[in-house]
Image 1 (cartoon, helix red, strand yellow):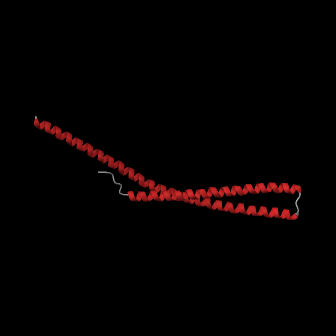
Image 2: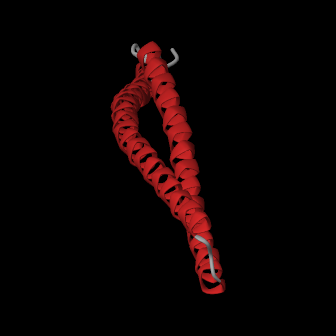
Image 3: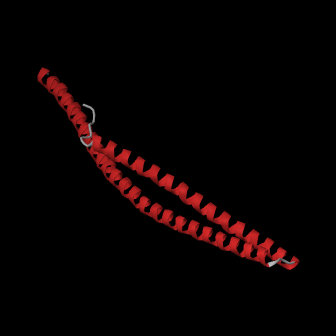
Length: 149
């Protein structure tokens, strides 16, 4: 008789749930990386613009150009702040999703461990049954040998 795990449907459901949560985690992680890259690029763009601004400042600028550069720098700072906020929110979401994934993984592992223990018990019972059958056959064959002599 083959092994049958009575909670196999639940195990499949838990595995499916874990896969879905892993996919969500991977998607959020990609978004975190993208936000971090955008923030880093915005910081790099600002550093480049500040370097160019310093060169222009040494060469001489009129007040309108100075005002424009300062306004542009404030806009870059707002963009960096917005990207930093987005990164922080996504990172928090990633941490929460990681917990959801870990719980789903833990629930699946609990059922898998139960399945493995039941399978081991099944194999032990099967082995004992086979041994008992061999012992019975041996005793029957020897009983015939003794009764026939």
